[in-house]
Image 1: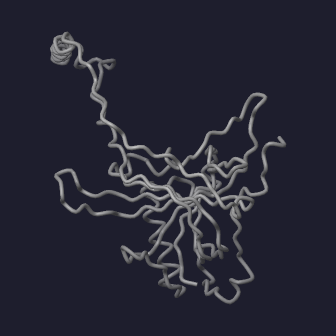
Image 2: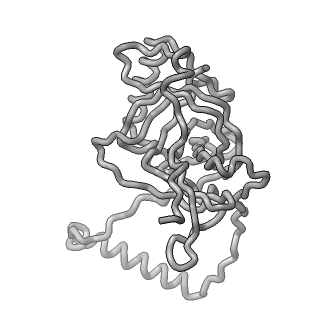
Image 3: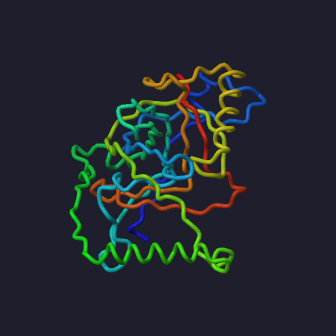
Length: 278
């Protein structure tokens, strides 16, 4: 398809050259060491309080997109895909200013821009509007109907037949809480030195914690690399590369679509990584 340009699908990384002077990788270490050149990126982020069960980090958030891409019909648009999408998750503690302020996780997605847009003097930003409270009109009979329905459901749940029936309605889990602190910006990332281990799952899997520990032990404790620390938390910077996801940009440089590709578990296509000092 001439409207699809695969020239910028993957971010450039080098495993030789500059690494020859930096590499202290041990003979029995299983991680991959990569040098990443500077890259212009877009970074949507949000504060999530739903934990692992919410699975918020598995997909780009809506406020990270600046346009939509037509992929069918006579007016289908040209787009450029990039990969991987990088995800970082850091803990945020609440300040206790309110009863519901218990902190959460700051999730940041980092999407590299295709090189052809890096020299653009103007790049689009998403339009984020604060949700406004909408007054809903309530019918006077709604309260009566709701009360009758509640009593009916209560009677059904107490029935010895419906309570034990495999087809009876089970109470569902509470809906996830909406994210807060939605932000999106562009930044020029400096050159980076990273170590990664392959993984087949998703950013919020429990197994990621064990891989982080293994990566830290091999790269830092065994091979002597110095981890790069987060300027706020003073903790090592871990990240997750979604190599099975592609972010798609229009000719104007707008992020308009994300494609998530199923890959077999044996492929170990995604990566868990840690940033190291150059």
